[in-house]
Structures are given as C-alpha cells and as structure tokens.
Image (cartoon, rainbow, N blue to C red):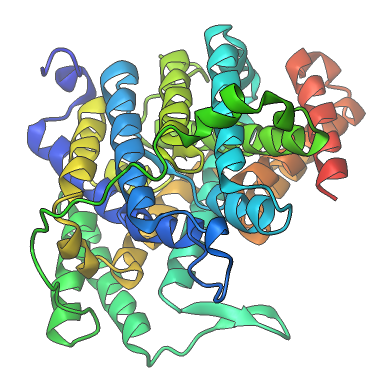
Length: 445
C-alpha cells in the first residue's frame, strides 16, 4: 500500500494521509445536506411536486457519487483530491434548467449524463490533458491564488462574517451572532496551531470548534449517532437514461444543447482550476505539467456519469480538498479515506449535523492564506503577465465562479502577450480558448 501510493517519495505516512482525508471530508460534508435541499428546491414554497426531486434519493445519490469519484481519484489518479456534486452547478440545474427553462428534472439529469459522456471521450482522446498542460505557468499560479481568495470569501460568507449589502454589495456582518463568534474562535485556534506547527492543525481546529459550538448551544446536539433506515435510491436511479431510450426526439433541441454545453464548460474549467491548485499546493506539479492528469480527468468524468445515473447534478473536483492538503494529505490514499467516509456517512448522517458551515469556515479561510502564496511566483513586473494574472485571480471571488475567473484571464492573456511582442510564447491552444471564452460570454449574456 505504501509503495503503491508512493508514501516514501512524497514524504507522508498513514496518519498524515488519514487526517488529511478526514479533514477534506469534514470540510465538504455540508454537500450531503445542501445538495438535496438545492435539488429539491426546498426554499421555494408551494412548488409543483412534479418539479421536486426526492430528498432521500438525492441524499443517497450525493453520497454515492462523492464516494465513487473520490475513490477513483485516489486509486486511479493517486491525487489527494475529493469529488462531490458541485455547488453552483446544482443551483443552475434546479433554478435555471428546471424552474426557469421548464425542463423536467429527469431531462436535466440526462443533460448531466450526456455532458459526462462527452467528457469521457475528450479525456480518452487526450484533449483535456493537452489543454491543461498548454496553460502557461504564470496563469496556473494565478488560478491557484484566485481560488484561494474565492474559498476564503466562501468561508467568511458561510460564517456570516461577510454578508450582502444593498449599498456596497458586500459588507461586514453582525459579529455578535453565535455562528460568527464560533467561526472567529475557530479561526484563532486554528491559526495558533498552524503557527506552532501542529500537524493536522486544521482538522483539530474543526473538531474543537464543533465541541465548543455544542457546549455553547451554537451547534445543535445530534439527535442520534447512527440511523440504519437508509433512504431509497429508487426515485432517481436510472432516470437519466429514460429520455435517451424512450423519447430521444425530446433531446434534439437547442435548449438541451445549451444545457449540456453549460454543464460541460463549467465542469471542465472548474476541474482544471481545482486540479492545478491542489497539485501546486501539494507540490505535485512537475515542469508545469500534471503527472497522471489524464487519469485524474477520467476519474472526474466517470464520477459525473455515475452521479447522473444515481440521480444528482454534475459531480466535480472540490476545492475543499486543499484543506486536506494543508492538513498533510499528499497522496491518493487521502482521497480513498474521504471516499470511504462518504459511504460511512450514509449511516452516521445524524452525527454530521454538528459540522456546520460556521465550524468549517476557519478551515476555508486558512486554506485561502496558504493558496495565495502562489502570488509570489507571478512576474508582476511584466505588465503583459500581471494583467491577465490579476484578472484571473480577482474575478473568481467577485464573479463567484472559478470558471469565470479563468475565462476572463485567458481572454486577456493572448492580447497582452501579442501587444508585448511575445506572440511566439503563446501556445496555439490558448488562441482557441480565447475564441471559446469570448463565445461563452456572448451566449451567457
């Protein structure tokens, strides 16, 4: 096992990998609650029941898709990168495709399935890996730093420290609320342990914050430890296949094509950005290239297909994996741990209620601190590099999307490089991405 996961080469061990995998799981366990709530559109009262997916089935699909994706990523690609149904894409699935477009959720699942199958073809052909390796190192550093800012913003928002403001878009929240105070406490504890060099400091920060939250009744005590009444997967399992076999004509529309392409685009570049960021943080990048990138992308693609068959929106790589890397994860064994924990979580779901967004917020904030260190490797003195790098970085938190940040920065990169007389340094693929991203914004509008 140690030899397969290259423990000696990566300078890691079982304890370090287990804590890393557990930390990643705790940082992203919220998806087991949030994804079912999103896909069932729980926040919308008096909705036609036909538009709602079954909560229990979506919970099961979420856990299984996350488990399969994480296990594949760990065993096949050997990366400390966990997967689960993606935030943002699930909201697009429910509130845009189903609610606004009026597309049945069954057909929307077919869109996810088709996008995943296309991903598999692109991955097996080597196109996805070629594109990622063609991205210049300077922009990869910017992507990593941008994701750091983005995930910090999410952490601050989850804790209620930063809130929406009608006058300034965002502003400081009420720091006297229980969730904000708990997050601030957790942040102080985690910072102290990180400064003192405590291994697994982020994990212990989450654990201490959860215990303190329960003591002061900010976090509710779990109603049970284990629940053997597992929800049925039947309401959603295999539904994505039905339109393909029963009514393929319903899929031959421009609207369905737009849905598939949107799932395809966002997942492609979210995954690319996350993979680059995690690999950079874990020190796995070699000569600006990702070892086993093809295997990592294939794991992501298969996870999307399996997730759609189970009954959930697009499964993608999770930036919360950086919390595990910060806690010591360096190999795929950490992802195996995370995947197994998602399976165990099906039974121990009641216990997960203590891991609230306020508890995990400090971990996301600290990860942001670690990831922006990539800024030091960007050639800020060269304006043709500084502009696309800065726009890539800043657009992620402001646009609330990894894909949007990548798109904006990659549009400016060939322009500034050509004006600077550095045309020969631009990889031909970057010109193609320029055109694709311009079209993306045109169609998005």
